[in-house]
Every structure is written in structure tokens, then in C-alpha cells.
Image (cartoon, rainbow, N blue to C red; front, side, top):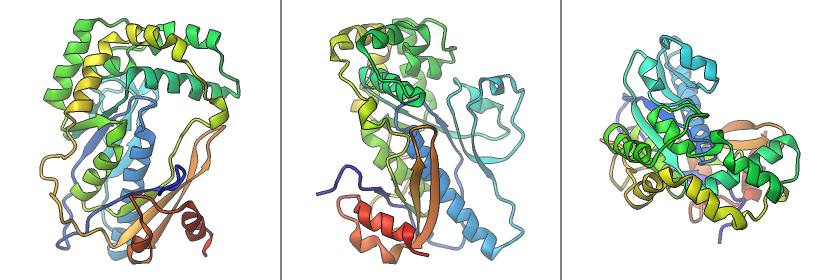
Length: 306
């Protein structure tokens, strides 16, 4: 049985020919929904793929992979560079500023769990112990209410939303997003994107997590949190019950994993996020993967090797 700290294995796909047709993806990253793990896994896989391509073709022109989170970027008239993968906390439709189309995706989370995680994560970043009184203040601030709906319908953090806005977010998700799911679907979404782009496999830590001693029981305020975030309930219900996990054209079953695997390790978390990458031959680790995890001791050993 896997330990909760064993790194996750996400299967990529070996290319059937020498040519790789890269599909462009834009992640609308709602904070505290697991998007950091997803973004890090996909960007690390692109990094290894591009490293392999540069070894074979030193002058190859390759697209960018980047995040766009600074609110000031919302004022940009356009983004000129070529991006194959981009992510942002900024509201929809920031992706329209790019000179090329994307397949859109997002990851959603149970509203109460997301708000609680957002609060305890903020406590960790400040080095401050959580408390019931401060949690009560946190959940009532406009910028912490219905964040998932606001991002998808293009509202600013301080703006209010209605139940009708929640219905509009559902329509946008179904009509404009190629794929989506909840935190329970991160493994399926990640592997689907890796395989869609013939990217290397990924072994990755649980990134950007809230450390145990900053967690606390906010159940006494759960009903209020759910009431304040009622506009999000239909959105989460849709993603939970009917996720779109396979992008158009994604291969179905029987996929041969990529011959290379990139390892992503978290090196710092409490103060700020940090990580390290390492590429290995898939053949050296594939037999040790159990239930989609690699024992942490094995993961540590791989990074310790020269």
C-alpha cells in the first residue's frame, strides 16, 4: 500500500513516429485546487522533451511554457510570444490575449475544502497559527468568496457574485473548456495531457501543500462557508459528476509509456515553493511503480545518485 508521501506517477506516451504535434493548453488555475502539481508536472515534462529536442536539433525553435499571475498583466493588450502551455490565476478570458488558440482547462474543488485550504495555506505562508476567530473573518472577505466562479466568468476578487453568475460559470465550463475535473481527477487529467502531447512520464512530489501543523478543524463554520459560496455548488457538482478528462484526440488505452521520465522534487515549501528536476530512463523505475506511486525512499535515492 502506498504511503501518503510517496511521489505520484503520471504516464506519458511514446511517440509513434519522429514527429510530435504539440497541442496548446491554457490552465485557468484556481488557487488551492491542485493546479500547482498539475502545472509543475506538465511543464517539467515539456522541459525534458525540449531538452531532448535541443540535443538532436540545437537550432530548433521551441515554444514557451509560462505562468501569468501578476494582476498587472491583465492590462496587457496582447501576449506576443508563442506558448504551448500557459497557466494563470487571472480571470477568463485572459487566454484571448495570445496570438494563437488554446484548449482550455481548469481544476475545481469542493467549495468548503478549498476555502479552508486557502486559509490554512495563508497561515503557513505568514508563519502564523490558524484560529477559529480569524477563519471567521477570512471566509467573509469578498476576495475569498466564490473564487472559482469569479475566475471563470471574468470577475475581479472584490466583486460580488450571484446564483445566476454560478449558472453562467457552468455554461462557460461546458461550452468553452475542452477538459476539466476536480482534485480527485488530477492524475487522470495529467496523464491525458502528457499522452496527448507525447510527453515524458512524470514522478512528482505533492507540491505546495499546507504543512500538517498549520491545519485545523473549521467544521464549526462549514455551513456558513457553503452558504457564502452557494454560487459554486452547481459548478463543482458538474465537474465532480461529469468531468471532461480526455481532450479531443487523446489516445485511448494501451498506451506505451514514454522511454524517459522526469522526476520533480519539492525542495522548499514553508516559506516559498521551490523544486528540482531530474530525468531518468523509464526502464530503470517502471517495475517499482505500485498503485501509481513510487516509494519515497526510492525517489530520494534516485535524486541522491550522481
